Each structure stands twice: as structure tokens, then as C-alpha cells.
Image 1 (cartoon, rainbow, N blue to C red):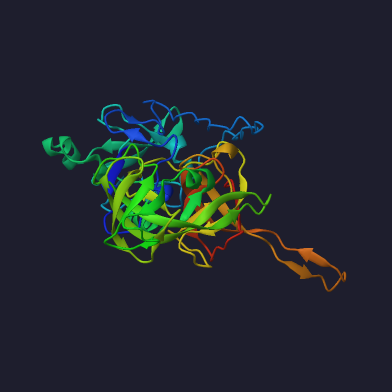
Image 2: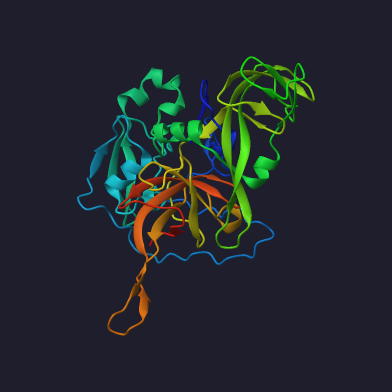
Length: 383
């Protein structure tokens, strides 16, 4: 699947929170390693990379049953401008994360992994099983202009607008990544602090070139795993933006915009990033049982298309595209008959799809919310 590459200018975006995740990056010339490659059958699950320090967990064994179709699923569907893969999967399937198990790649179509507006998707039967395939590519796709049209015009898995806001406002850093970020060591002119118009000296920018733009942040409060009290990330405070003027160690960076003073120890993150938006939603290959530990924009009640952070990552078997159900913990209420108390069942409240994975934390986009979600809600494999 394609990778959308763009530069975020005039916004305090954070590379730490962009969507380049292991197993999801792709080369437009040969397709995406994270999507099925076979032409006649659904792809086998890809085993996630497991940390050597973690014990192996048993793989989930799925009972061989027909994939449940959505009520009123159409025989054919014409892809519309603005559709996402999640929307299309929901049109055909009761549970969109079964898409990889039912999508059939048409070998007669160039770039068969990609779906474009105007394509006609149809329900067919192959070897006695229902499959969805691209039965007629759009005239737009088959025209000579399609050869030079950027691949980022293909249908994406998630709405770009939701991710764009996340890139601009995201203020959460994974612990190991935060500790490796370049940092401010001095200011030109013996200033203790610096603001827009000043130049500063930064260590750790050795591989960058003049003209590279950065967001500047201060590392803030710790993010603590509620299950073991271990620090797994940090919140961050936006400082401003800057542009490299001269390479070196330290390099010289001119501050172009600030909302507070920059000082020694502040960190620098490149604002240019490759963003994969095309991947298949799927159920995790292993059991996941975690919690929401933060919401990126700091609200207390979480709704659709907001970005959340969970306390599970690649070391737990989580992968890009994995879909998790969100459960609100049942309250403990008094039992007036017995005189004691009882804990009510956990209730499913939404669905989140993971798009950025670190070892110990992951970022997900809330795709559905039947009621307001909150930090410390549970996330588990969909049933």
C-alpha cells in the first residue's frame, strides 16, 4: 500500500507521534508487505515481532466459520471519493477487521491491493466461500492518466484529517524514543533562553541537512503503566519551530516561531515524515489485554477519531492495523439483598485501530464509540 509523504509547515508537529510503524511501510512500486500478496486466497496472518525478553504467548486459534456479513450487505458497491477502507469493510462485513480474510486480489488489475474512487467491488463465491473483489476498475484508474496519478489518491484505511490533527497536536513520546532525541545545548549570544529570531546550538542532528525543519518540545510528565507502575512514555510541551542553518555537532538552528522560551535540554523533532495510511484492519494475532493510558489532545471523554495511547506494544504482539475493542470497567455496587457488594460486568464501548507501534506503547484511532471512552478503560481482542 502507498505511503503518503508530506511536510507539515507552520504547525508544531511531532515526529514521535507520526505513523511510521514496523511492518506497515511500503514501496508503491511493489505493493505493501503488510497486505495480502496471494492472488487466489486470503493472506495468512503475519506473526508480529516479539521481544526476546518476553515469553512467547500462544497464538489465537480462530474457529473456521463463515465471516459474518453486514445486514443488507450489497452485491456490488461503487467506491466513493472520501471513503476509507474501514467504511468499505463496514459496508460488507459485520466486523470490519475480518477484511483480510475475505478480500480477494484480482490478478488482472495493476496494483490489486489498492482501491480507487469509481472502482466497483463485488461479492463473489470462490471455492464455496464469499469473497470481495474489485470486479471492475474505474475508467479513471484504467485511463493513461492513472499511470502518473499519485498513489496517495487511493482509498486510505483511516481518514487523513484525523491523522493530520494528531500530527499537529500530538504530545506523547515513547520513553526510549524521547531519550534519543536531539537536544539544545546552547544559544548564540550567551542568552540563557531563546525565542523566535534567535539561533541555538543542537546536538544529535548529524544526519540532517540545512533547511530541515523541527518542532521543539520540552519533555514533561511521565506516562506510567497502571499495571506495573513502570514509566513507558512522557507527555510533552510544545515550544516552537526552527530550521537548521548549519550542519555540525552541535548544529545551528534558527528559531522561526515560538510560543514559549526555548532553554537548555529542550528536544528537537523533524517535522517531515512518511505517513502510511493504507493498511488492512485486522484482529490481533495474539491475545491483547491492556488499557488506555492517555488521549493525545488531553480531553477527559474520548470519542470517534480521537487518538489514544495504550500500554501495550510490539513486545506484546501488537501490530499496525490491529483492531481492539474498548471496555468500560463495571462499577461495584451494593447488593441490598445479600448485604454485600457485586462488581457489574465490563461493557463494550468502542473500537480502536492501532496505527503506530513502539515496543511498550501504541497509538490508536477510535473508529467507533457507542459511549464516551475514558483513560484506564480496557482494550482487548474483538470478539
